[in-house]
Length: 63
Image (cartoon, rainbow, N blue to C red; front, side, top):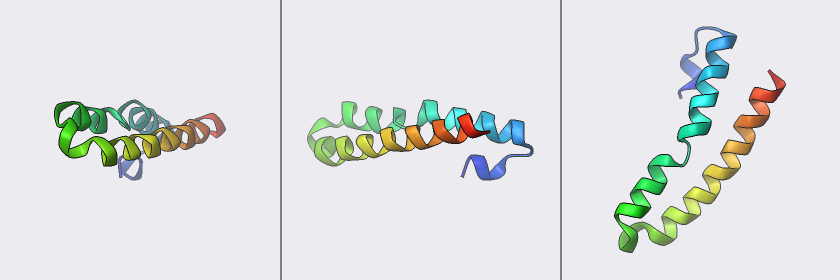
């Protein structure tokens, strides 16, 4: 959603970089502050976010 609002190619790259930095921040915060409730699912989602970071990094490299 962040990158879809980009105004230019440069803005798109910047938004993708922001997504890379924040992709697992909120999930880690959720798991760390509520370990009993979100531990298993949260860790699974964190692994998915790591894969997304790899994809985002490839997008930036190609641009």
